Length: 232
Image (cartoon, rainbow, N blue to C red):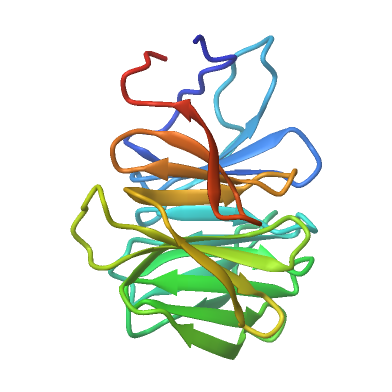
């Protein structure tokens, strides 16, 4: 399976990617502390059009109105995630859980709210405009990554009992973004990261190298797109 395009520019691992909500732009954050903005064109190869130096970038997310970015600096920054102006990259606010190392966050409800999770196992919902905590939901364990569905209604969280990786552990938790009610949860072996697709499916990566598609309405696995035994 040949990739359509390879992008080169980071001096280290690429930790996170986020598509522009409408245009063909891709944002990447890496262990070199850089945010890279790419114009995606499979017919030509080009380097990043913009970058900024800083601490290790664990995750980046573009807001639905394309005016703001959500980025997590290195984990030891007291669980914080920065809200950045997408043009100037100036910090417009900080959200996150001071009790944990920051791991993941996402925009929801047309960018009016932000969800953050961390290794404290607490899911927090914030007002994106006021940078104010609206409510929080303790799940226990370690909340590794989160993703808000494109419609802005449902939050998905990947949960593990503890930091160590166990192939048999892992749970997906679906949360109502309006009131924090748990909608559904199910066991997902080896769960690591997850993300919503535009057709309301959950793409899941596992610790042993699989990429899986799950049906969130039933909590069942539909197919495996890639396994560690397959060559790219």
